[in-house]
Image (tube, rainbow, N blue to C red; front, side):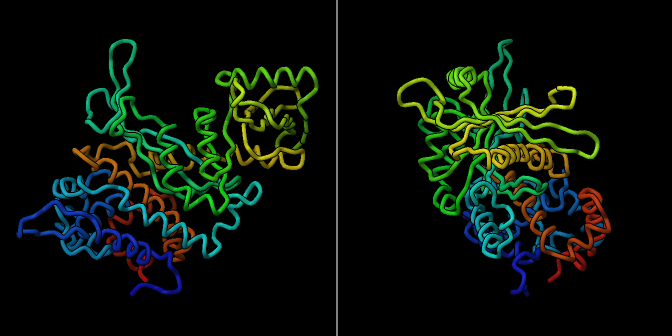
Length: 424
């Protein structure tokens, strides 16, 4: 029975996934259907939840040695399909069919006030947008991938996605949101790219997120007129990295203003426990992001951190539509810098902390690769939520330590997680 008091237990989260799985399309038309769609999809998800790099082989091994698998015990799967059968059936399932689970988890956590301390500049949430590869090869490719042609005549084949996350300064935990995949688009001759994928994400999710008050964070690639206008038109705010090499017009204005004392400056000294650092903030409002009378006007700020001897240890600059003052420039810079958490706490975690994001679990002809990545990111979200709210999950993690240790023990001890960590 699912707990009505805590919507964030393992059972509650899996039940949310189970509900959307019921609507998955099934390409099988014959009467001999040995596995239902729920078993197939949950079997795939269980692979990513248990962070195993071998597609369900561990479940097969456990069935031989233990008589019952974790997939059956934890996910209430009746029969575990073969890995090839799962790959084949999941190929026709669009990943968007799983997105309601991301939505439900976010809404539920927000409703219960769990994101109150994620509010930042002017009370906004911060959502960081950044793209990453989840497959990269000189040889293996499919029609749904991206091709990079190199000057030496070689090609690189890749699969990419925008993986948005909710972030906040000082927090080492990110909240995964609905992905947007970078794939060839019907009716478009040009290759797909990160900026175009971001525009699609804005169109799809502005109605859900923008009324909440959201500032979008991104790197220098997104700091241009088209993305800035798209963000504003979608009802979002933005803080985007803006570097001199890619913003000649903007920095020519800044140079002129600097020579004429038109840029305000604010200095803050701080003690790190080992040394004293000086943060120098420079900022100005209403400067053009590009040349032309129709140029988007942005507000610019820069941080330069120096040691006592003048050595620069950090420097970065941001363009935003938030008005900048001496009172909020430190906060805006801190919020902008938190966008880098999408690389450190999201991409790097998914690639190096047991999720095997870059492992080739199968390309398929339609949606397989995207679908499996979506289930992987959803597993990461479930782990994050459980680490916040399920005290039995926390107890097991506390005893076993790191993620890898936890799931190694999970695989070898069939009931430890079921009895202590997630049973409700």
